[in-house]
Length: 317
Length: 305
Image 1 (cartoon, rainbow over the protein chains, first blue to last red):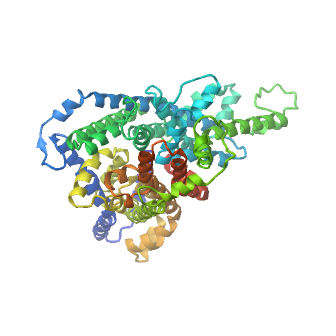
Image 2 (cartoon, rainbow over the protein chains, first blue to last red; image 1 turned 120 degrees about the vertical axis):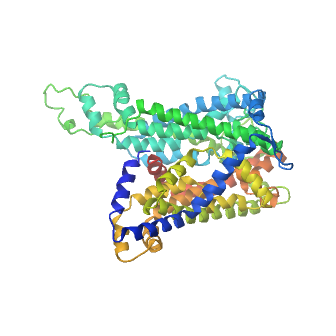
């Protein structure tokens, strides 16, 4: 995103080596595609090809054994009458809408707390980052399930304060908060990125604001937020797209069923169940394409609205 | 929040009517620092609690994990859970699962390093028609939900008779399918001075020489962070093995863990958690050894996104 100016500068600076320009260009083209070959092969065979065939499959009935049968838009029409599908959309949306902002708020708050010249920075940064590395693993899903289970440490701890919720895992209205806590727990990765962004903000901006009598709140909204906006945008976009694709934790916590009462039936889990347990691969392909379209639209909206609130310091044309 | 060490700080003694709310005495500063550390350490405690609980529970007898005991450490410290966990499941030893995970992770590292570095060189250092378009497409795949490709991929691998082998899990790594790593290396190479290539070209070196003898050695930091992340991602991967592997002898650890959960249900919590600890152990060791590379990598490469 922010890289485009350097891209053009680099390509210019490698260009003016022009002994026999035409021969060089031909050799460069050949070399370029030779070096690009691994990625190009993968792109065609593992991304573009499959995308086209899954688009085709989404208009068919296909069970892996009989040849696909063309049914037009039936899969898409059926989706919107499928209660389990609608439930999976609801579950995923509430996870994305509540989990992502909470996670980023935690990341930003702690990044600001850590952004000073005090000792122990490295330790704190690493300690807070650690959950991001393991949070999506099967091991942590098992631990989460045990911790939030009946008379697990969370239940015990809350009972100590007189809050008796019982196990969260078996309670359909508590599983979403539990999943959201799991993603918020992994705030470390965006935090590290925020921290790097905060360090780029010139200290004299804050000094000047102090001179003018600005308090911490005004400094946050008038300096930190606008200066950090490209980083906030990057984190928001990546974390949102990422959140739509949660799978392993949901699968393990619900024993691959999305329970209790469908409260952890995430979109990708339902897609998996339809495609690989029921072998309704046309239907699952329609779900996959719908996800691509939704994520695409969200990305587009993010980029369109970003013009009004994301400020790039290099915008001095 | 942040107290800047402003040069005006040394002049609070002068009675000049300067409005300077930031000037503080040494003790006030020390108190602030102590409060900072107390808050930060308390937060670290909360954040790392699940990990501590996991490790502590793995050493506890089953009867003490759920309920009744609120204390983190048990007096009945024992390795029994680990002994049970190492026995494995379904007649397959946990050592086999470890080996499988290791084969897949090392394969992923080798494949990613080879394919991503070569492809990144083309993007970063060679001028060829179509480069901009392909680069844009590569970035687009970073945002693409990969679920859209898994069904056709599965169908193809199934027809090729490659289900229940490691081929579907590794082939993408050798074809630079993790665009993130290509992007990371492109960014890294773009920051290397262009004069290097130009000088080498004048000396008559071709792209193969420039890539092999100039770029690769200079890219060490990017290669190291790529290796670390592709290892850990492969180690933790669940969906890939879940889709493609059917025989327990071929399972990597995450899939073995699921099998373990399915078969024991909640009857042997201790062994289940011990196995979870074992499965995370290599990741934790990696983290402790390479934490600077890992955190540094996230902060710089993430930012350049």
